[in-house]
Image (cartoon, rainbow, N blue to C red; front, side, top):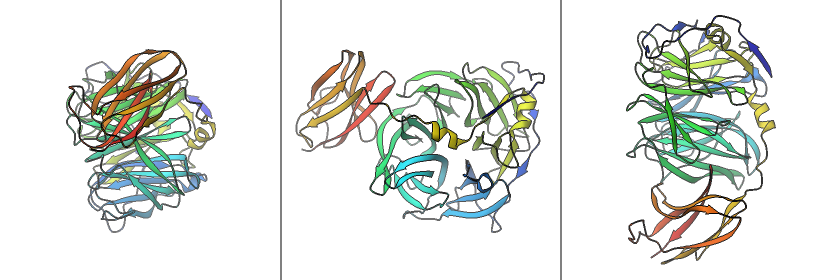
Amino acid sequence: MIKLKQKLLPVLLIPGLAFSSAVVIPLFLEMKRPPEGHGTMDSIAIYVAENPNQSLIFATDKDDNFVEVHNPVTNTFLGKIGGTGAGPGQLQYPNGVGVAYGVLTGSGRKDLLFVVERDNHRVSIFSLPERKFITHFGVGDLVEPYGVAFYWNGSELQAWITETDATPDRVFVYRIVPDGAGLKGILNYSFATAGRLESIAIDAAAKRALICDEIIERDVMVYDLLGNLITRFGKGLFANQPEGVAVYDLGNGEGYIIVSDQNVEPFAEYEVFDRKTYRALGHFSGATKTTDGIALTQAALPNLPQGSFYAMHSDDVVHIYNWADIAKALNLDTKIISPRTAVEERPQAPPTDFEILSNYPNPFNPATTIKYRVERLAQVRLEIYSSKGDRITGLMNEMQAPGQYQIIWEGRNDLGEAVASGIYFVRLAVEREAYSHKIMLMK
C-alpha cells in the first residue's frame, strides 16, 4: 500500500452553488467501441486481474442485452457476455454490474461478475476471468432491479440489489453461499427506501449503505445495515440527478464518496464528499456527458499507477480518468490498494452470537414454535416477513439476556388476520446485525 498526499491549494466549494463551474479533469482514455457498434450503454465495473495487464472493464448494453468486455491497459475490445434471452447465461436489459473477489463457492474461492437484469427479474453470476455462467438468483423476488453493491459479513458475501418496481422502492439483501459445485443467492431481508433510487454503494468500514435518491430529494440517503435511514447528504448540490456513487478508502474509515450529477450541461459533474462527515469537498467534470454509471479502482494498473476513475459517456462509451489528476486538482489523498489484498486480509466470520436454531413444525399449520439463541445482553427484534420482503408482524422487540428462547407464531399479521399459505422469513435482528430463517405455512 502506498499513500501519497498532493500538496496543492484546495478547491473551495460554496454551499448551495451546485451550478458553479467545476474543476475540469483531462480525459485520460476513451475506450474503443465494438466494430459492430452497440445499443444504449449503462453501468461500469472494473476487474483487476492477478496480472494487472489483463484487467477488464465491463459495461452493460441495455438494448442489445450484452455486457461488453474491454482491457483498460491496452484499450482493446475483447468481446461480449450474454445475448438476448432468458436461458442460462443470456441477458435481458442488463443494468447494474459489479465484481466481487474471492467468493466461496462449492468448488473453491472464485472471482465473480454480477449482472442485474431488469427484464429477466434476476441477477446472473459469471466466473472471472473465464466469463463463464454459474447461476442466477432473485427470480420471484425482483421485478425491476437496477443496482448492485457488496458487503462482506465476515467471510460471507452479501449482494445488495436495488428494486424500483415497488412503491416505495426497496433494497433486497441476498446471502451468496456455496451450493453443490457452485453457489446460490438466498434472500436475507429487504427494506423500503425513502427516495427514488437506482445506484448503491456499501461503505464497509462505517457499516452504511449509500443510496442515491435521484428524483424526490436529489441527494444521497445513508442507511444502516438493517435498513434504517440514518441521515441524508448532498441536498442542494446536484443540478440534475445524483446517479452513480463510489467510495474511496483511505483506511480507518477515512476517504471520499464520489457521486455523479448525471445530466449537467455541458458536461457531467462529480461531487466529492468526506467519507466520515459527508461534508462537500468540491466537484469536478471532464469530457464526459450525461453520465450514468461510474466506477473507480485504487489498484495500480500499468498505465495508471495511482488509480483510476471510470464514467459512462453519453450512454455510449467508457471514459477513463487518472486519479492522480483528480487528486491534484482537488487536493485529495491517494492510497494504492489492491482488491486482492483486501481478500487476503478479510477476517473469517467470528462465531455468531445470535442465531435462529429451528422452528417446529415446518411446514406448519396453524402455528409454529421458533427457537433462537442470544449470547450477550442486547436489544433483540424478531419479525416475520413475506417472500416479497414485506413486514407481516413483530414477535419480539426488547432487551434480552444471554440464553435460548422460543416464541410461537400463529400465522397472523399485526392486525390479527390469518395470512395466506406460502414462504415466510423469520428475521432475528440484534443491534446492527440480522439473521433470517425460511419457514413455510401450508393450509
